[in-house]
Image 1 (cartoon, rainbow, N blue to C red):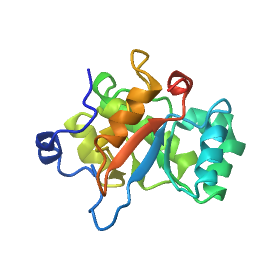
Image 2 (image 1 turned 180 degrees about the vertical axis):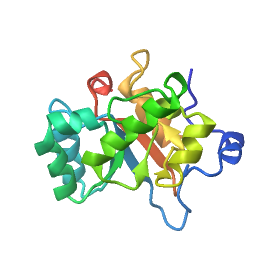
Image 3 (image 1 turned 135 degrees about the vertical axis):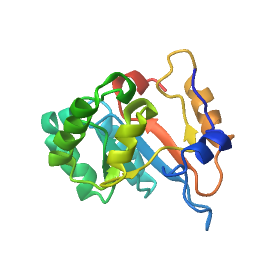
Image 4 (image 1 turned 180 degrees about the horizontal axis):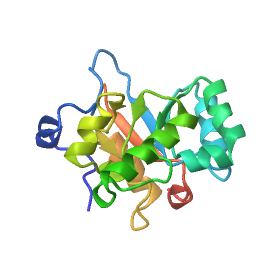
Amino acid sequence: MYFVKTPPFIKTLFSEYTWNAPPHSNTVYLTFDDGPIPEVTPWVLDRLSEYNCKATFFCVGENITRHRDIYYRIADEGHAVGNHTFNHLNGWRTDFATYMDNVAKCNIFAESPLFRPPYGKLTPRQAQALKQDYKVVMWDILSGDFDPHISAEKCLNNVIGNMQPGSVIVFHDSLKAWEN
């Protein structure tokens, strides 16, 4: 189970994270997690270019090392990048030292002050340590594109029906999200 729209009480409880941006304009913030991969990320970059849009890509370090050319394309085209751990680790299932080492290993390649925890899961100790060196960026809207039980139309409706100025929206440039 997951929330499409992050409930206000969660944003309040974890107020040290960035959930959305101030609604100063009609801007929304597109983010893509888990890439870069050759089967999906170039297609995403082409669509963003077609509409003159910029996004933030929270990259898995292992994917950066395998597909450096795509990673460099993300940066060359003016998109922001963020750290998404080296091996897409779940913070709740990973001990502190291993998790922090994995984040540091990713940052060798991502070199970014932005961090998004895979699955949105961090322990309090991990969060405390990370916020000293990173801006932890969560989301306002989770598209659900990774969910094999919903359609592409439902993913679109998840976003359109919930976005507002300042929303941070999560999509995935991964194989499991490709259909949606």
